[in-house]
Length: 122
Image (tube, rainbow, N blue to C red; front, side):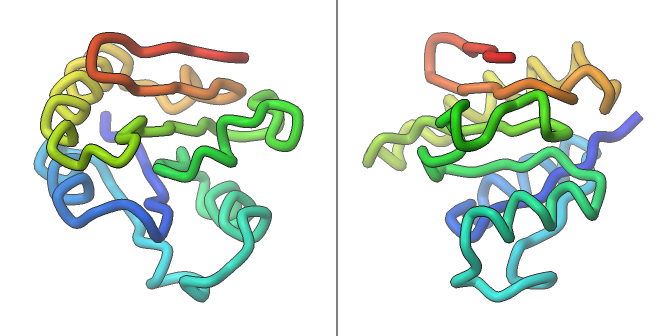
């Protein structure tokens, strides 16, 4: 079973291709809404498309503004101005996704992907 993702504007082609090559469906923000859309519009569009949001935007890790229980899943890649770690982050994420392939598993959760761990907030 493949997962469905909505890639925020800040997500690189490398991340998109990595997810696609792992067999997942991924939608690019620019194909659905304006690239300068507000965060609220971005996460709303992800929900409309029945997708897990993938972002580098730290705003989505704010569980007060974006309570995970209200969404179908948020994945925040923690690059922190070091794009060279993106391949390591993606290897960690791909491994995790391969063991959790049900869209319902991600609902109501925020996944913070770091090089050495994945933190989950609900």
